[in-house]
Length: 301
Length: 304
Image (tube, rainbow over all chains, first blue to last red; front, side, top):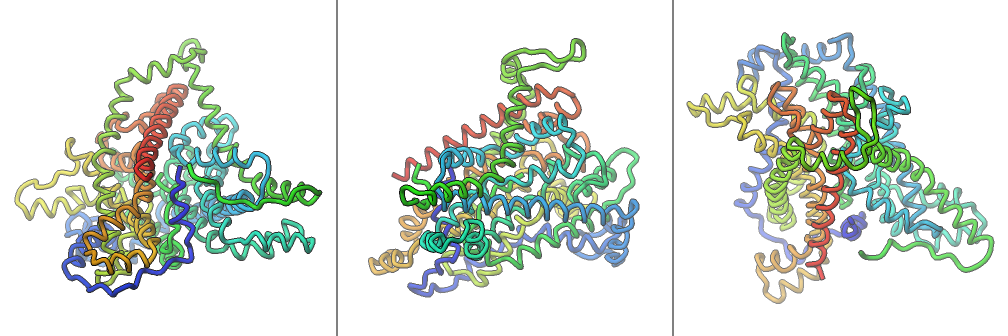
């Protein structure tokens, strides 16, 4: 499956939009799509107003405007000190999961995709079939089995329980494979071989540089998948000290909604804001990569 | 199925060929080791587990395929499975239709501020599903959210997102919000791959915008649309995060078998029935892969 992506995903360098004629701008169409844009940014706008409110204002004031007090700085301070400052811990945990998990996934997918695209060896076709099949395996269907296995191995409730499953991205491997097949000219590799360079050396000195756009894209989607990971931590972790941000936020939310709860909705909202800021910035900075075509990912969790 | 991406074809003979071939396998090995550990092993282990039964009295017992037989007549399993199928049948077409219209509009070049649209519509994809569900969950609520304000304005209960018969729609809205932009981008990328000359030729032939859309653009996005559909199907069958978060906001709202995934989760973590949970996960995985495969097959056949 997913073979039709080849065409749309491999043209990273981007065929420019057609210019056979410059179409007239349409106000009607702009307004029409404007509604969709409003829908897209509505919750984020609500969130931006929300972070400026304390708990009473959240309940009493209109969602899309400021409350009586401007409590943004109090909220920020409280998020970082509440519960012994555990939010900072969750933030750092998330960074660890992203750097090691998504970083590792990118490395494995890059080396693997390159190997599959540029070398012929026994079992290559089998790898192809298995990996494509794996893309269709629902990630969550795998989560419960992985938990059962990891609890046998004593890996649950450790950071490894999150990192190890994040290391494997069949879709990343597939994207890298398609990308490497086009980006690295075979003649270049043969020339290096004639010169007596080892394959590893060729990879690091020649191929890696050519693969950079593909690597950034694969990394981007791996980062999103890891940063947004929720189901896996939910089933794997008990110890709040190991939580990533997503699970920590849920914990605060559940605490705030339960029986005899302490209502800390303002902290949940401010924490949610702080959770999305880094990932949104990453996306804006790396626009060029996701906008130019490599756009699919096995990211729905 | 079309061909594999091309590989280097080594010249016959010699130690060089063997060396190169070994190096190729070496590049792939790290991935395969990790893959075996977190893909193959859990699948194999849960297949094994699904052949047993956990009982309070008598411990764990080999029962063959009994668990599978039980899943197929389990009303709780079907409750969730039918719900996600209904969800799939309604939410996915709506979401993809919106994504397609947006992609065509952006590609037409007739929008003011095209860049803003592209970024703004895609932005929700970067938002973690948990946070998306929380934001909407808050906005749905009477006390903190917008629903209360709207209903006050209307003077009656215009919206009731947490009412039993609206709940699935409310969840569908959250999922649509999260993934419209992502699907739009997949379709938009396919449109961008149409060679300029095609449009030039069509313009010379006097084709109007409508006919260009119908005869050039829609056929051009079909493959991407099939991919987007397959990913959406997989996503729908896995539905978990959104209902689970709403459950955190409004206790007793979501039943323990609301979706098959929630059911499997409940079975293994509250019910201690790991074998049965493994069976539910496997059955759902097989159904998902089967339907995804059928869609793929159908979508591709129309290609030829």
